[in-house]
Amino acid sequence: MVIDAEGQRLLSRKVPNNESELLDLISEAMSLSGHSGELTWATDLNHGGAALLIALLSARDQRLLYIPGRTVHHASRIYRGDGKTDAKDAAVIADQARMRRDLQPLRVGDEVSVDLRILTARRADKAMDRTRAINRLRAQLLEYFPALERSFDYSRSKAALLLLTKYRTPEGLRRLGQVRLQAWLKNQGARSSAAVAETAIAAAKEQHTTVPAQRVGEMIVAALAREVLDLQEELSQLDALISERVAEHRHAPVLMSMPGFGAVLSAEFLGATGGDMSVFENVDRLAGVAGLAPVPRDSGRISGNHHRPRRYDRRLLRVCYLAAMSSLRSSTASRTYYDRKRAEGKTHTQSVLSLARRRLNVLWAMLRDGTTYGPRPAAPAPLAA
Image 1 (spheres, rainbow, N blue to C red):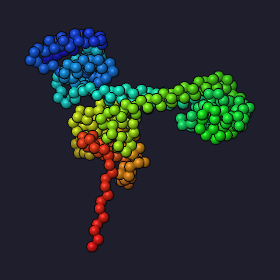
Image 2 (spheres, rainbow, N blue to C red):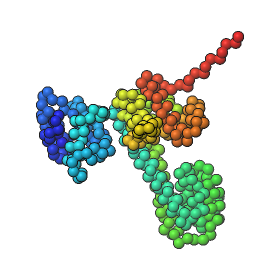
Image 3 (cartoon, rainbow, N blue to C red):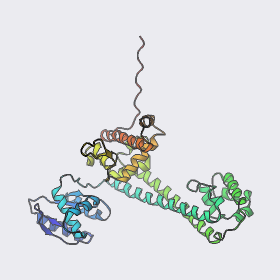
Image 4 (cartoon, one colour):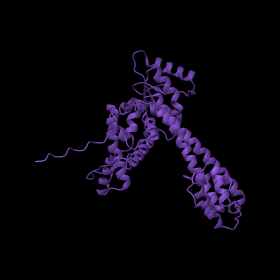
Protein backbone atom coordinates (compact mmCIF):
# COMPACT_ATOMS: atom_id res chain seq x y z
CA MET A 1 0.00 0.00 0.00
CA VAL A 2 1.37 3.40 -1.05
CA ILE A 3 -0.26 6.60 0.21
CA ASP A 4 0.66 10.27 -0.05
CA ALA A 5 1.03 12.84 2.72
CA GLU A 6 -2.77 13.39 2.81
CA GLY A 7 -3.54 9.70 3.08
CA GLN A 8 -4.76 9.23 -0.49
CA ARG A 9 -4.07 5.76 -1.89
CA LEU A 10 -1.72 5.69 -4.84
CA LEU A 11 -1.05 1.94 -5.09
CA SER A 12 -2.39 -1.25 -3.53
CA ARG A 13 -1.48 -4.76 -4.65
CA LYS A 14 -0.08 -8.08 -3.47
CA VAL A 15 3.63 -8.62 -4.20
CA PRO A 16 5.39 -12.02 -4.20
CA ASN A 17 8.40 -12.27 -1.91
CA ASN A 18 11.10 -12.55 -4.56
CA GLU A 19 13.84 -10.15 -5.60
CA SER A 20 12.64 -9.13 -9.04
CA GLU A 21 9.10 -8.35 -7.89
CA LEU A 22 10.35 -6.41 -4.86
CA LEU A 23 12.77 -4.40 -6.98
CA ASP A 24 9.95 -3.49 -9.34
CA LEU A 25 7.85 -2.40 -6.35
CA ILE A 26 10.68 -0.24 -4.97
CA SER A 27 11.19 1.41 -8.37
CA GLU A 28 7.48 2.06 -8.77
CA ALA A 29 7.13 3.50 -5.27
CA MET A 30 10.13 5.76 -5.81
CA SER A 31 8.64 7.01 -9.08
CA LEU A 32 5.35 7.77 -7.33
CA SER A 33 7.15 9.80 -4.66
CA GLY A 34 8.73 12.05 -7.29
CA HIS A 35 12.22 13.43 -7.35
CA SER A 36 11.76 15.82 -4.43
CA GLY A 37 9.32 13.86 -2.30
CA GLU A 38 10.42 11.96 0.81
CA LEU A 39 9.65 8.23 0.73
CA THR A 40 9.16 6.31 3.98
CA TRP A 41 8.72 2.56 4.20
CA ALA A 42 7.09 0.72 7.09
CA THR A 43 6.74 -2.96 7.99
CA ASP A 44 5.40 -5.02 10.87
CA LEU A 45 8.23 -7.61 10.58
CA ASN A 46 11.84 -6.97 11.52
CA HIS A 47 13.25 -10.31 10.30
CA GLY A 48 12.04 -13.61 8.87
CA GLY A 49 9.81 -13.16 5.84
CA ALA A 50 10.72 -9.47 5.50
CA ALA A 51 14.50 -10.08 5.51
CA LEU A 52 14.86 -9.81 1.74
CA LEU A 53 12.83 -6.59 1.54
CA ILE A 54 14.79 -5.08 4.46
CA ALA A 55 18.10 -5.94 2.77
CA LEU A 56 17.00 -4.40 -0.53
CA LEU A 57 15.80 -1.19 1.14
CA SER A 58 18.95 -0.95 3.28
CA ALA A 59 21.16 -1.30 0.21
CA ARG A 60 19.34 1.67 -1.35
CA ASP A 61 19.48 3.85 1.81
CA GLN A 62 15.69 3.93 2.12
CA ARG A 63 14.08 5.06 5.37
CA LEU A 64 12.34 2.08 6.98
CA LEU A 65 10.16 2.15 10.11
CA TYR A 66 9.16 -0.81 12.25
CA ILE A 67 5.60 -1.10 13.59
CA PRO A 68 5.07 -4.08 15.94
CA GLY A 69 2.25 -6.40 14.99
CA ARG A 70 0.51 -5.76 18.32
CA THR A 71 0.41 -2.04 17.52
CA VAL A 72 -1.10 -2.78 14.11
CA HIS A 73 -3.71 -5.04 15.71
CA HIS A 74 -4.89 -2.39 18.17
CA ALA A 75 -4.74 0.40 15.60
CA SER A 76 -6.98 -1.60 13.23
CA ARG A 77 -9.91 -1.12 15.62
CA ILE A 78 -10.15 2.60 14.85
CA TYR A 79 -10.45 2.02 11.10
CA ARG A 80 -13.68 1.27 9.31
CA GLY A 81 -14.78 -2.35 9.02
CA ASP A 82 -14.38 -5.39 11.27
CA GLY A 83 -12.74 -7.58 8.65
CA LYS A 84 -9.06 -8.41 8.55
CA THR A 85 -7.20 -8.72 5.26
CA ASP A 86 -3.63 -8.20 4.13
CA ALA A 87 -4.73 -5.12 2.20
CA LYS A 88 -6.31 -3.58 5.31
CA ASP A 89 -3.24 -4.35 7.41
CA ALA A 90 -1.03 -2.72 4.79
CA ALA A 91 -3.28 0.35 4.76
CA VAL A 92 -3.15 0.59 8.57
CA ILE A 93 0.64 0.27 8.58
CA ALA A 94 1.02 2.94 5.91
CA ASP A 95 -1.38 5.35 7.62
CA GLN A 96 0.24 4.87 11.03
CA ALA A 97 3.67 5.52 9.54
CA ARG A 98 2.28 8.71 7.97
CA MET A 99 0.80 10.09 11.21
CA ARG A 100 3.04 8.87 14.03
CA ARG A 101 6.37 10.41 15.01
CA ASP A 102 7.35 7.92 17.73
CA LEU A 103 8.17 4.95 15.49
CA GLN A 104 11.72 3.68 15.57
CA PRO A 105 13.69 3.24 12.34
CA LEU A 106 14.51 -0.35 11.53
CA ARG A 107 18.24 -0.89 11.25
CA VAL A 108 19.85 -4.06 10.00
CA GLY A 109 22.16 -5.56 12.61
CA ASP A 110 25.77 -6.37 11.85
CA GLU A 111 26.58 -9.75 10.34
CA VAL A 112 27.84 -11.29 13.58
CA SER A 113 24.72 -10.22 15.52
CA VAL A 114 22.43 -11.63 12.82
CA ASP A 115 24.33 -14.93 12.91
CA LEU A 116 24.07 -15.02 16.70
CA ARG A 117 20.32 -14.36 16.57
CA ILE A 118 19.88 -17.35 14.25
CA LEU A 119 22.18 -19.60 16.25
CA THR A 120 20.62 -18.76 19.61
CA ALA A 121 17.12 -19.25 18.20
CA ARG A 122 18.20 -22.67 16.93
CA ARG A 123 19.69 -23.48 20.31
CA ALA A 124 16.48 -22.47 22.09
CA ASP A 125 14.45 -24.77 19.80
CA LYS A 126 16.79 -27.70 20.46
CA ALA A 127 16.76 -27.07 24.20
CA MET A 128 12.96 -27.15 24.21
CA ASP A 129 12.99 -30.33 22.11
CA ARG A 130 15.34 -31.91 24.65
CA THR A 131 13.06 -30.91 27.55
CA ARG A 132 10.01 -32.34 25.79
CA ALA A 133 11.83 -35.60 25.00
CA ILE A 134 12.94 -36.01 28.63
CA ASN A 135 9.41 -35.38 29.87
CA ARG A 136 8.03 -37.99 27.47
CA LEU A 137 10.74 -40.43 28.50
CA ARG A 138 9.93 -40.05 32.21
CA ALA A 139 6.20 -40.37 31.57
CA GLN A 140 6.69 -43.55 29.54
CA LEU A 141 9.14 -45.05 32.03
CA LEU A 142 6.73 -44.27 34.85
CA GLU A 143 4.11 -46.54 33.26
CA TYR A 144 6.10 -49.75 33.65
CA PHE A 145 9.23 -49.09 35.78
CA PRO A 146 8.55 -46.28 38.31
CA ALA A 147 11.51 -47.23 40.55
CA LEU A 148 14.00 -46.54 37.75
CA GLU A 149 12.17 -43.37 36.72
CA ARG A 150 12.69 -41.74 40.13
CA SER A 151 16.27 -42.98 40.55
CA PHE A 152 17.97 -40.56 38.14
CA ASP A 153 17.80 -36.98 36.93
CA TYR A 154 17.78 -37.67 33.19
CA SER A 155 18.37 -34.01 32.37
CA ARG A 156 21.80 -34.19 34.05
CA SER A 157 22.95 -37.82 33.91
CA LYS A 158 24.31 -38.96 30.57
CA ALA A 159 25.11 -42.37 32.07
CA ALA A 160 21.43 -42.92 32.93
CA LEU A 161 20.45 -42.16 29.33
CA LEU A 162 23.09 -44.58 28.04
CA LEU A 163 21.66 -47.19 30.40
CA LEU A 164 18.17 -46.78 28.93
CA THR A 165 19.40 -47.33 25.38
CA LYS A 166 20.07 -51.02 26.18
CA TYR A 167 18.90 -52.02 29.67
CA ARG A 168 15.54 -50.63 30.79
CA THR A 169 13.47 -53.46 32.34
CA PRO A 170 13.60 -54.85 35.91
CA GLU A 171 14.25 -58.46 34.86
CA GLY A 172 16.87 -57.43 32.32
CA LEU A 173 18.84 -55.47 34.90
CA ARG A 174 18.61 -58.23 37.53
CA ARG A 175 19.75 -60.84 35.03
CA LEU A 176 22.74 -58.70 33.98
CA GLY A 177 23.97 -57.94 37.48
CA GLN A 178 25.80 -54.99 38.93
CA VAL A 179 29.34 -56.03 37.96
CA ARG A 180 28.61 -56.56 34.28
CA LEU A 181 26.44 -53.43 34.12
CA GLN A 182 29.23 -51.35 35.60
CA ALA A 183 31.71 -52.77 33.08
CA TRP A 184 29.35 -52.03 30.18
CA LEU A 185 28.79 -48.45 31.32
CA LYS A 186 32.52 -47.96 31.71
CA ASN A 187 33.12 -49.20 28.16
CA GLN A 188 30.55 -46.67 26.95
CA GLY A 189 32.56 -43.88 28.55
CA ALA A 190 29.98 -43.12 31.25
CA ARG A 191 31.05 -41.26 34.37
CA SER A 192 30.25 -42.64 37.83
CA SER A 193 29.55 -46.04 36.30
CA ALA A 194 29.75 -47.79 39.70
CA ALA A 195 27.18 -45.50 41.36
CA VAL A 196 24.82 -45.64 38.36
CA ALA A 197 25.02 -49.44 38.19
CA GLU A 198 24.36 -49.77 41.91
CA THR A 199 21.34 -47.45 41.76
CA ALA A 200 19.87 -49.18 38.69
CA ILE A 201 20.20 -52.68 40.20
CA ALA A 202 18.65 -51.48 43.46
CA ALA A 203 15.67 -50.11 41.48
CA ALA A 204 15.33 -53.43 39.62
CA LYS A 205 15.20 -55.36 42.88
CA GLU A 206 12.28 -53.21 44.06
CA GLN A 207 9.96 -54.42 41.28
CA HIS A 208 9.26 -58.04 40.29
CA THR A 209 5.92 -57.50 38.55
CA THR A 210 5.76 -57.12 34.77
CA VAL A 211 3.37 -54.35 33.79
CA PRO A 212 1.40 -54.81 30.50
CA ALA A 213 2.81 -51.53 29.16
CA GLN A 214 6.40 -52.81 29.38
CA ARG A 215 6.71 -54.55 26.00
CA VAL A 216 5.96 -51.50 23.88
CA GLY A 217 6.99 -48.94 26.48
CA GLU A 218 10.61 -50.07 26.66
CA MET A 219 10.97 -49.64 22.89
CA ILE A 220 9.74 -46.05 23.13
CA VAL A 221 12.00 -45.34 26.12
CA ALA A 222 15.04 -46.57 24.19
CA ALA A 223 14.17 -44.37 21.19
CA LEU A 224 13.61 -41.34 23.42
CA ALA A 225 16.89 -41.91 25.27
CA ARG A 226 18.80 -41.98 21.97
CA GLU A 227 16.94 -38.85 20.87
CA VAL A 228 17.94 -36.99 24.05
CA LEU A 229 21.58 -38.02 23.61
CA ASP A 230 21.55 -36.80 20.01
CA LEU A 231 20.00 -33.49 21.07
CA GLN A 232 22.62 -33.06 23.78
CA GLU A 233 25.36 -33.61 21.23
CA GLU A 234 23.80 -31.06 18.88
CA LEU A 235 23.49 -28.56 21.73
CA SER A 236 27.17 -29.00 22.53
CA GLN A 237 28.07 -28.31 18.90
CA LEU A 238 25.85 -25.21 18.86
CA ASP A 239 27.43 -23.94 22.09
CA ALA A 240 30.89 -24.32 20.58
CA LEU A 241 29.80 -22.51 17.41
CA ILE A 242 28.16 -19.71 19.41
CA SER A 243 31.27 -19.26 21.57
CA GLU A 244 33.44 -19.04 18.48
CA ARG A 245 31.14 -16.57 16.72
CA VAL A 246 30.45 -14.30 19.69
CA ALA A 247 34.18 -13.84 20.23
CA GLU A 248 34.33 -12.09 16.84
CA HIS A 249 31.99 -9.26 17.90
CA ARG A 250 33.48 -5.95 19.00
CA HIS A 251 31.35 -5.89 22.17
CA ALA A 252 32.32 -9.42 23.24
CA PRO A 253 35.16 -8.44 25.64
CA VAL A 254 32.90 -5.93 27.39
CA LEU A 255 29.92 -8.28 27.68
CA MET A 256 31.98 -11.28 28.77
CA SER A 257 33.61 -9.23 31.53
CA MET A 258 30.23 -8.49 33.11
CA PRO A 259 29.43 -11.00 35.91
CA GLY A 260 26.67 -13.37 34.85
CA PHE A 261 27.21 -12.99 31.11
CA GLY A 262 28.66 -16.12 29.52
CA ALA A 263 29.02 -16.89 25.85
CA VAL A 264 25.39 -17.94 25.32
CA LEU A 265 23.77 -15.02 27.19
CA SER A 266 26.14 -12.57 25.49
CA ALA A 267 25.16 -14.04 22.13
CA GLU A 268 21.45 -13.74 22.95
CA PHE A 269 21.92 -10.12 24.07
CA LEU A 270 23.72 -9.22 20.84
CA GLY A 271 21.16 -11.10 18.77
CA ALA A 272 18.25 -9.31 20.43
CA THR A 273 19.77 -5.82 20.23
CA GLY A 274 21.50 -6.14 16.85
CA GLY A 275 24.82 -5.21 18.44
CA ASP A 276 24.15 -1.48 18.01
CA MET A 277 23.25 0.42 21.19
CA SER A 278 22.70 3.69 19.29
CA VAL A 279 19.35 2.31 18.12
CA PHE A 280 17.96 2.73 21.65
CA GLU A 281 19.16 6.36 22.13
CA ASN A 282 19.56 5.93 25.91
CA VAL A 283 19.51 3.26 28.60
CA ASP A 284 15.93 4.08 29.61
CA ARG A 285 14.75 3.21 26.11
CA LEU A 286 16.68 -0.06 26.24
CA ALA A 287 15.16 -0.86 29.64
CA GLY A 288 11.69 -0.20 28.23
CA VAL A 289 12.29 -2.57 25.31
CA ALA A 290 13.58 -5.21 27.75
CA GLY A 291 10.53 -4.86 30.01
CA LEU A 292 12.61 -3.62 32.95
CA ALA A 293 11.12 -0.11 33.09
CA PRO A 294 7.80 0.02 35.00
CA VAL A 295 4.88 1.77 33.33
CA PRO A 296 2.68 4.11 35.43
CA ARG A 297 -1.03 3.44 35.64
CA ASP A 298 -2.32 6.58 37.38
CA SER A 299 -5.81 7.96 37.29
CA GLY A 300 -7.38 10.70 39.36
CA ARG A 301 -6.24 10.45 42.95
CA ILE A 302 -4.42 7.19 42.33
CA SER A 303 -0.71 7.75 41.72
CA GLY A 304 2.43 5.70 42.02
CA ASN A 305 0.72 2.64 40.54
CA HIS A 306 3.25 0.89 38.30
CA HIS A 307 3.15 -2.34 36.33
CA ARG A 308 5.25 -4.19 33.79
CA PRO A 309 4.69 -3.02 30.20
CA ARG A 310 2.71 -5.27 27.91
CA ARG A 311 4.96 -4.70 24.92
CA TYR A 312 8.55 -5.72 25.44
CA ASP A 313 11.15 -8.13 24.11
CA ARG A 314 10.68 -11.25 26.20
CA ARG A 315 13.91 -12.80 24.98
CA LEU A 316 15.86 -9.72 26.04
CA LEU A 317 14.15 -9.72 29.44
CA ARG A 318 15.07 -13.38 29.87
CA VAL A 319 18.72 -12.62 29.11
CA CYS A 320 18.87 -9.78 31.66
CA TYR A 321 17.04 -11.84 34.30
CA LEU A 322 19.22 -14.94 33.92
CA ALA A 323 22.41 -12.85 33.91
CA ALA A 324 21.31 -11.14 37.12
CA MET A 325 20.51 -14.51 38.71
CA SER A 326 23.90 -15.88 37.71
CA SER A 327 25.73 -12.83 39.05
CA LEU A 328 24.44 -13.52 42.56
CA ARG A 329 26.94 -16.39 42.81
CA SER A 330 29.97 -14.51 41.49
CA SER A 331 29.52 -10.81 42.21
CA THR A 332 29.61 -9.35 45.71
CA ALA A 333 28.06 -6.10 44.49
CA SER A 334 25.08 -7.94 42.96
CA ARG A 335 24.56 -10.04 46.09
CA THR A 336 24.68 -6.93 48.31
CA TYR A 337 22.12 -5.11 46.16
CA TYR A 338 19.84 -8.15 46.03
CA ASP A 339 19.98 -8.62 49.82
CA ARG A 340 19.14 -4.96 50.34
CA LYS A 341 16.04 -5.28 48.15
CA ARG A 342 14.95 -8.40 50.01
CA ALA A 343 15.40 -6.55 53.30
CA GLU A 344 13.09 -3.84 51.95
CA GLY A 345 10.34 -6.45 51.66
CA LYS A 346 10.51 -7.19 47.94
CA THR A 347 9.98 -10.71 46.64
CA HIS A 348 12.72 -12.75 45.00
CA THR A 349 11.47 -11.98 41.48
CA GLN A 350 11.09 -8.26 42.21
CA SER A 351 14.60 -8.14 43.67
CA VAL A 352 16.15 -9.89 40.67
CA LEU A 353 14.32 -7.60 38.24
CA SER A 354 15.48 -4.56 40.18
CA LEU A 355 19.03 -5.91 40.09
CA ALA A 356 18.75 -6.54 36.34
CA ARG A 357 17.66 -2.92 35.82
CA ARG A 358 20.61 -1.61 37.83
CA ARG A 359 23.03 -3.87 35.98
CA LEU A 360 21.65 -2.63 32.65
CA ASN A 361 22.79 0.89 33.57
CA VAL A 362 26.28 -0.43 34.23
CA LEU A 363 26.33 -2.46 31.02
CA TRP A 364 25.15 0.52 28.97
CA ALA A 365 27.96 2.68 30.34
CA MET A 366 30.50 -0.07 29.67
CA LEU A 367 29.38 -0.48 26.05
CA ARG A 368 29.26 3.29 25.55
CA ASP A 369 32.80 3.81 26.85
CA GLY A 370 34.25 0.51 25.63
CA THR A 371 35.47 -0.42 29.11
CA THR A 372 35.41 -3.82 30.77
CA TYR A 373 33.87 -4.51 34.16
CA GLY A 374 35.91 -4.07 37.29
CA PRO A 375 34.84 -4.21 40.92
CA ARG A 376 34.59 -0.89 42.70
CA PRO A 377 37.83 -0.20 44.60
CA ALA A 378 37.59 -0.25 48.35
CA ALA A 379 37.50 3.07 50.14
CA PRO A 380 40.88 4.03 51.65
CA ALA A 381 41.24 3.56 55.38
CA PRO A 382 41.16 6.78 57.43
CA LEU A 383 44.51 8.13 58.54
CA ALA A 384 45.45 7.68 62.14
CA ALA A 385 45.36 10.75 64.30
